[in-house]
Image 1: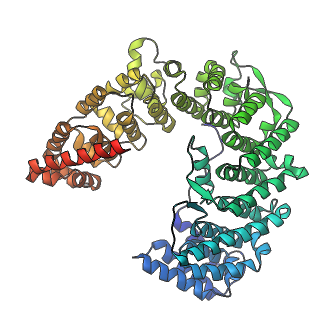
Image 2: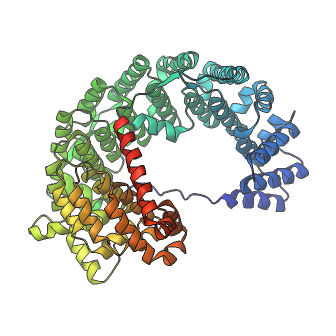
Amino acid sequence: MSGKGVKRKKKHGSFVSKMKKYHRKGSVGRGNHIEEETYLYFLRMYEAQKKGFDSEDDKSAFVNNFLEEIKDHEIEYSKNQIGSRLIEALLPDAAPENLKTFAEAFMESLRPICCDEFASHVLEALLRTASSRSKLVQNANDKEEPDMQIWDEYFQNLVSKISKFMLNNLEDFVWDKFANHVLRTVFISLVGGVDARSLKASCQATNQKSESILNVEHKMILKDFAKRLMMWPQLGDLPFEELTSGLLQILLLALHKSASKSTLKSILNALVDSYMKSSTNELLFANDTKEFESEKKMSFVEIPSVFEYEPAVHLFEVMITVAPHKLYTQMFAKFCMNRISALAMNKKTNFIIQKLLHSCQESAEFESIFTELEPHLASIFQIGHSGVILSLCQTGQRLTVKQGQILQNLQKILNCYDPKDRQMLFVPLLVSLKTYEVYQEEKEEDKPLITNMHGCLILQAMLAFNKPAQIINSMLSMTQKDLLALFCDSKGCHIAEAFLRSPTVGAKSRERLFKILKDSYAALSSSKYGSWVFEALWEVVDTKQKISLMEELILNASVLESTEFGSIISSKVSLQTFRKNREAWIQAQSRDSKKKKLFEDIL
């Protein structure tokens, strides 16, 4: 797979170790100087909160006592590295009164705080906490106690005050490394969001209507941010810098969530215009990896030069995601049409095609994209851009278009289309994303099947195709040993769930799977991921099949109950009740089935 190196997730202890190392060298960390005694106290407090608390009361007492202790020193300590990290961690659990005291201290010096390396993070935490406490997004039927309503109003006003201050200083803060991130948190807080990741997830969910009502003032402030930016002569420069591109991405996502259609459309049009003015079509090789340069089929394709800038590419991905359908069509025509395959094979731009597919709502547009991609799918697979193939499958499944051709193309890519007997190996080849030859070679060497995330996700999408018979037959031709290994895998377990819950997989196919797994259910239930598969299977089998499962589990009860996940399954299916009184267990299952059916009928 192409792309820059993945950042490793730092262990929790790394920050504490670094702070202790600073102290051994005679330092009290970076940022504002604090007394050594205070530094060591903060370090102990940080370690204590990381370990957790016995109860919520203990946690609350810990947090509020600390905030009372640092009263009148809020800004001083927030500008220190350890102080900032500790306060940021504790603010979400503070009592409203202590939050108010802390906020009032910060409001006196907002400008320097916004641009401070450490205090700016505390301000972001304060905004997130105020956003969650104020119920910025409220359901129409919510009823609150008078005291809670007072605090709701206070925190709503707090978010408004900070947001207006940021708006008034927008020109200065946009270019500042730390204030820029405070601005992003302001946008998220104005729409009741938690963080950028959750905001992106909510915007990427298709065809979902929100039952929430946004604070009217916050919605207007968000629009004012967009209008102010659109008035800037420098708007056309913002997409090309990482810092400012990221800011625009969050603004677009927030406008989309706030349903500010007119403002969103206006700023999108302004950005599209700036992209057009900045673009000159350049002859770029369709694939930027040297190993394919000798292929005669490859040709040079004109790609807008704006896509040479990674920040502009990332912003364009968000623009495609939030664009209303008419504007989506225009962006598709201006920037992507007749360039789909070239963009898909380019390291920087292949994610544009993934977003283009995910946001596609019209069958005709999907067919146009598919037509351009189809001749180059093998090359896309070979250079490792399997995310494009995944997006193609998911969109084909969602729009119920080109499903047969997608299957056939994948079989050809994996070299199992012809001769036909190879088609039975389609599932193991797909979940590992390996060609027939590579798979056979590894099998001869007795190597275990290693699943690929994109391969497993592609199979999950294809199991929901209208006619998945070939896929089902391939999956059910696998040996019990191979299926068990697949279902006990962190990625493969979701394939079983997709199979069991797919509306296009028939009862007979589920029954065949049930029989193949016979005598392996104890092993399945004892595995962390296999136990999920067992639960999914339990939901779809009838009472007779459940009895068969229970009889098998009884024979392996000691092994089952000696494992963490096996004992959980044993408890959930009431294994001991079945052993002592089978009739009572059957009656209980019958009652549960009736309740479930009644609930399904109501839904």
